[in-house]
Image (cartoon, rainbow, N blue to C red; front, side, top):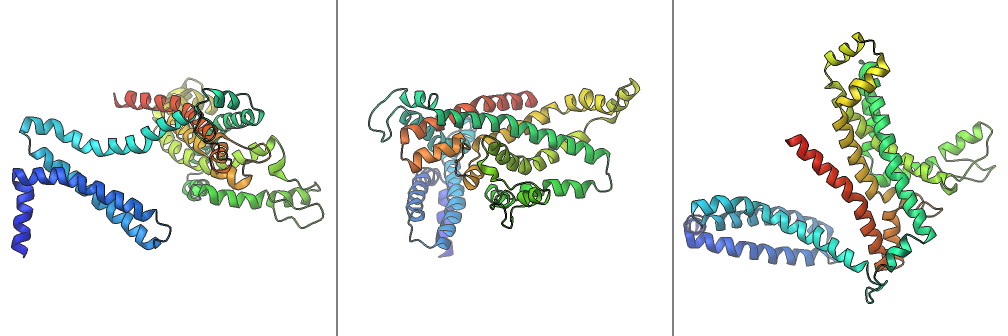
Length: 367
């Protein structure tokens, strides 16, 4: 039995017909298994343990078999053709996944944005006109713009200040201080939102205040406030949650960059008469400018995708909707697929310029 298995393996791996069979049959087998696994994992009655096991085994094993099959197919060709095809064989699965899960859905979303709520009647640019003229939609766009401007810049500024202070002022307690600032990064967006719901919790005047912020206000002689209903300040209160989460990330990355600034440059600036603040803005910030921009765009991408905080805290009520939450509500609550797709396209248009800028910077750094 073992000899038969060994000879069969050798036939698949060493003979040209075997490699051809494996190279053609392998991807077909993987596609069939992936499709069957997808149907199984969509079954609501399937045990969760079985779903996790199928996802792990099929995901890892299927990808391995796919690459092995493509490599065997490449081995059939002459050496010159083989060297040209092998990189394509390894890139092809990833390219197909990007095509199937990103490019085609994005194109379909753009197409649906030109139709009515049921995707049955072509309405042209009517959905886009509604988004840019409806008062609620304009509030959503303004809120999103506020998140994009305030959260990344405040997070990076605080992270940079904390990184420099931890590096210059407290060498002994630097690790402890950085750990405390970085700690919120270990909390999910939903978990952080639940925590801050307790911080902002409100009870009528005269009742015991379980919210930390209102408890402090009452202790100082003030009146309790329903913080997340105070328009437009409630948007700032929600933004602060994201700032609290991302400042630690910015601080860790920028701290490493600050430590990489040559001491000779700072000493030269001091010799020229520059003080601590002047050295910081004239030497440190320009030297780590690339890192600052990278951290800034990374947080900006997170902000553009933010949904959890707004939905858990307010569900978009009291004028706190952003594009992602409004897109979810239009698509899955109101079942208006045309308008929901329009918001998704607008969110994509928000992201594309920053993606292009990041790619250009990566190419510049590589060159």
